[in-house]
Image 1: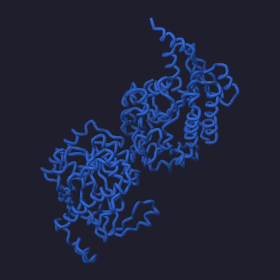
Image 2: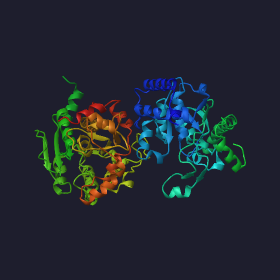
Image 3: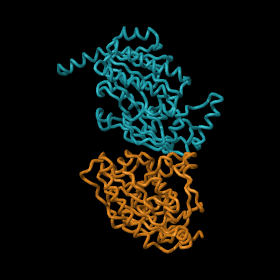
Image 4: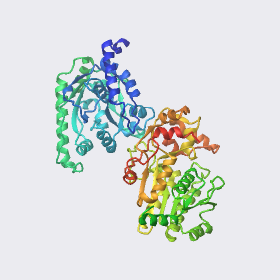
Length: 287
Length: 328
């Protein structure tokens, strides 16, 4: 089993090369959350084998990523934020000029011992408007999941149903005139194929959600990441415009991500039929 | 030979008298030295409710042990016609005054009295030293809090009520009397140095400092000399208002400890609160809010200060500041 995680020599060399490029890019960079290149390296050492061998990630649309800051906007799936980790790994290892994409994390996560610290050192930030502004001004890219916890914590019957996006990310993008890079992740829902959300009990313990799953370890569902074409934000709209004026623009982004999810589901790898088939039979529908 | 206007300024300068409240503190003495060096003809009166035996001697410096609630303190204002007053006598909860009621009396009522005396005796300018602790170290803090950010410290930590209330008393008073008295309220980040005996300096210098393994908050530090310089320049360069005081740089706590060469004791801060409760039984506890400052960052914005003092008003960068902490 272990050899499945062992990278080939070529893959190891690729990872090392990409880290060297990151090292060069971020040698003079520091941020007020404690970003640390050593932690990025340690994270890459752990995550990249999982990325290549366990989740066998494929990335489509890399040609859409230019050398400029983006508000990277993705659907959120899979009960635990592994999708964010895989998107960040894609940006750190697949681009010609790799970069650290800073994921926005929940307040709950930022306050946790160890996890909050490690994620901050690896480049994550608390989802806060000022934090985003600071990073975008530095030319950094931010990864946001506008569905929030609602997106990640879905029960089985709601897999791949995109939840309504919040508007905050678009207002920040408007303020800094940063392009939106839409991302659709396929395959993360099946990491935990049978889920029941015990949100009521979770709230009593101060947790944002409490998914009860059949498996504790995510299953090796193959992941596809689709990067859409960058979307320019409106030049005429104020960041403080009322929701009804922001909504059509956000809806447009939702539509693009939804379309890419739909297309991605048609062409995904037939790897985990033994997991998907029972779900399909159970739900009487095809994903 | 100076021009007529220069001579006029010099003659005006000769007549200035400054009151420094809290003169026994390291920062107050640095400030007094700076004033006496830069303005050799000024007269400085230093007062403190603690012993003033540690205060340096200078022909233009008079230091007195005096309680601010006494009539003799009021007489000082009557006798000296102070031009400028520095209030650097805020009492921290980490000191011997663990009783909140006592601190409220000294910090809030004491400050109120000082402000009242400044107004009654036509002081031209008062500079009050508050702290960035008023913002609170909370897990949802944004970065680089501006001066108008809510003061959330006392919501979570009742023991900081006096510090927040003192700050608010000053800011309310400032706007009420802005046409009568110039006033400046400074909220500095962690002031460190070999002469200032505050909790942060002691923590960093201790070989037994707890080194958090589960959190690594980002800190801002300012050297005590730089802070004294800001206090001094506040007289001429800062108009009435509230100012955060910090350099542009910041550093994660563990890296700061490494820079100083303090290994400390690796410790999970998550259990520090529980441990503190046990220590409380023997009256050895540390203030609860300080534990959260070892968990969560509280970074302040310095742009307003830089608007008035220039782009880089500080002498020491963060590495130098940390390295200098051990020097005497």
